[in-house]
Image (cartoon, rainbow, N blue to C red; front, side, top):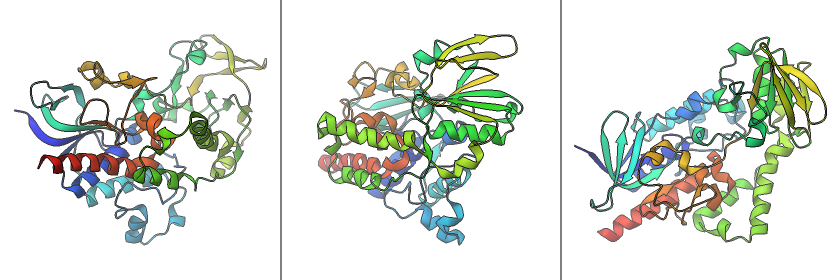
Length: 389
């Protein structure tokens, strides 16, 4: 027999956990499936730090906050900033305990819209069980959207490169020479971690000027995200020029400035920065790779790491590709088309996190948007339930 719920939340990362907490607050019957914070545990490296401070939260109600956890522990933000990955995972675990979120650590294998059953959704799980749900919120891991730019990959020998999310264990790089492609925070973070692990050399190639080690001003982001709660459509209603300006301002944070606490770990004799360059060619030998940049410089490396971010192609989500959802889903440039409550054109099916950035702004590619997302989706579901009664 199927398990049955009113709301199935697929994904137990920050967006999924926040959604579950708000559903509980609203009294919505729900179920969370997915390994809690699994992408953060598996695809992010030990020793990584977050760019956000203690004001970033998982709780849409702002009760079980990082500040509250620190109060319980007798500590202050100054004691834990910059936030380490280990601390953030501990906060997520504490938040899950405080809000009594019981996530089932099993993955969805296939998601279908079950015609003839009141329009319910049916999720086939990896353990052989099925779950029937009236509403579905999809908040999947970024891993599905790791971006390997074609113009870069076509110049690289097969099997000799990895995206940053696939290179999180640095024990094997001791004494090795590495090339990192990319010039934003993650590229410099991985450079620092390579140095920490004792690499022999780290080359960093990127297309723009070198960013400054200077904390960027991100105080303007929170008010914009909060505005979405009161006026969900403000971003999509902007004229294209103004929308592009918001996006450019957001991404300029990573392109122009890098967190200052990285400087001492990056700027070492082992590191060579190559601003305004691209890979021109890579020649493979038995023991090494010979890299030539478009400025004429050449050097040998043992591994190439692509810090090339993430790009949404919703059809890369395996459980959607196997089901009948994609055939009905309206998309644009790989993104699902969403209404002002993160609902797709398929009634009662919602998508949040990175796939929502096209309609709601770049903030939703980060944890800034977890509260706004949970509130808007939760209110839509609760409102529909109220109308039914």
